[in-house]
Amino acid sequence: MTLSVVITHYKTPELLMLCINSIKNTVKNITFEIIVVDSETEKRNKEFILDKHPEVNFIGFEKNVGYAKLVNAGIKEAKGQFLLILNADIIMLESAIEKLLDYAKKNLSVGIIGPQLLDFTNNIQTSCFSDPDWGSILARRSFLGKLKWGKDKLKKFAIGEWDKKSLREVNWVQGSAMLVRKEIIDKIGLMDERFFMYFEDADWCRRFRKAGHKVVYLPEAQMSHYYHRASKKWGFLLDILFNKYTRIHILSSIKYFSKWKNYEKNQ
Image (cartoon, rainbow, N blue to C red; front, top):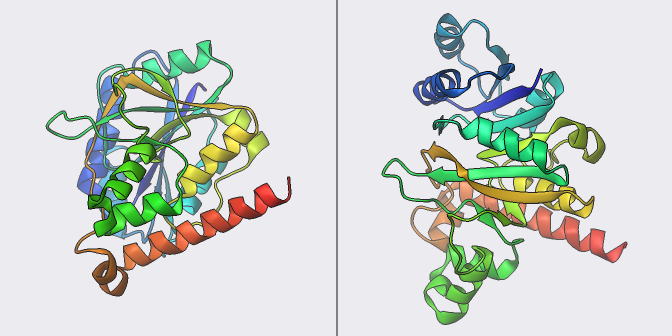
C-alpha cells in the first residue's frame, strides 16, 4: 500500500466528515487507507462516520489522550509506505496528495514534507517555522510582540521575509498536515508522548533533521485549514489564569527546551 492517512480527531465530526470526503474525492490512482484516531470517543460520532465510510479504520480513546498519542496509535496501525498525518480540520484540494508523494519519491533525502495551508478565503497561513526559543514564545503571547524586539523575534520565528509560494527547506512544519516516510519513522521513533499537545511536531522534525533527513515546505501541494488558535484568547496573564490550552502550551515549551538543552549538553 502506498499511503496511510492518519486523521486525529476531537469532537468535530462534521469537519472530520468533510476531511474524509475531500480525501476520497481528490485522490486518484493511489492505494490508500484512512485511519481515524479519536479522543473522548462518543458513540454517536463513531456511528456517524462509519455509517458513511465503513472502510475507515476507527481507533477510539475514552479519554483525551493528547495529540502525540493519537498520532502514534495511527502510525502503529498504518500499512502504507508513506503516512499523511492530518488534523480533522484539513480539507484536501485537488492533487495535493499526489504532489506530496511525487516530491517525496524524487527526493529521498527528505523525511517530512508540509503542504501549503490556506484559510477558507484562500489566504496563505504560516505553517513552517524556525526552531522555537523563549523569545519567540514571549513575543507571541505578550505585549512584547508589539515592540521592535518582539517583532524581530516573530519575524525570525516565521523565517523572515520570504515568498511562501516557493519551495523551501525549513526547521519544522506544523503537525496539522505532514507527509512522512514510514521507514524513517521506524528508525527515528514515534512522536514523544511527553508532549500532551503543542511542540510535538517541532520536536519530531528536529529529531528527523538531527538524523540527516530534511524537512521541506512544498507550496504547490495545497490544503485548506480551519485554524483556531485555542491557546490564545485574552492576553498572556489572563490566558495563563483562565485558558487551559495556554497552560498546556507553556508546559510543553518547558519540556521542549529542557529536552533539547539536555541533548545539546550530552553531545
